[in-house]
Length: 201
Image 1 (tube, helix red, strand yellow):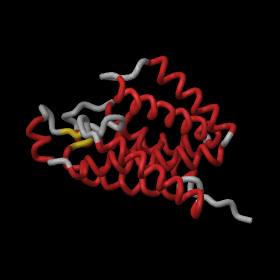
Image 2 (cartoon, rainbow, N blue to C red; image 1 turned 45 degrees about the horizontal axis):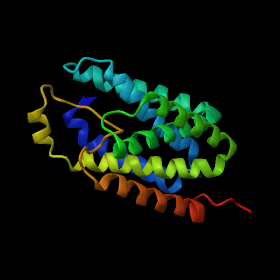
Image 3 (tube, helix red, strand yellow; image 1 turned 90 degrees about the vertical axis):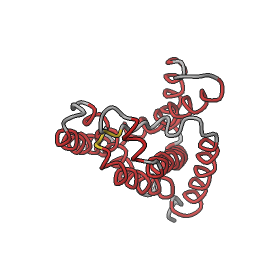
């Protein structure tokens, strides 16, 4: 979570980081790992602070982000497995939205995360391209929806002046989100396979 005043800059950074991942994720994989490590670390770090402590939230987000980025960048192969696992968990959450309500069963998330991790290690290049394209597409959508949200209405509806990032549910009730995610992910994968992720001879 971050103060509401940081929502728009954070949302724009999500869009930019997502675009980098979506369209050049394979070529810049270590950078992409650093970006997602930073996002994850910042989310965890800032959530450990009280909502009333604005300075503490920002400092914890920065510290957690740096630690998360360093961990994923230095743990390259672990990072590949985690990217595959993350993609599997994302597929479980998005797919469950069509067949049930609430969160998907834990066993489904675990199984798809394991399958994704194994697949990422066996077919590294293609899994990295697909995972970064679809992960980047989702990040673009999360950031774009957050940037387009009426922040004044969000603050009025909130009991505390903080913005909480919900990366798995960026826009409840908006049927276009999964369709846009798939289309943008396919475009990103195509760009990477044909241009940015092409193997050099």
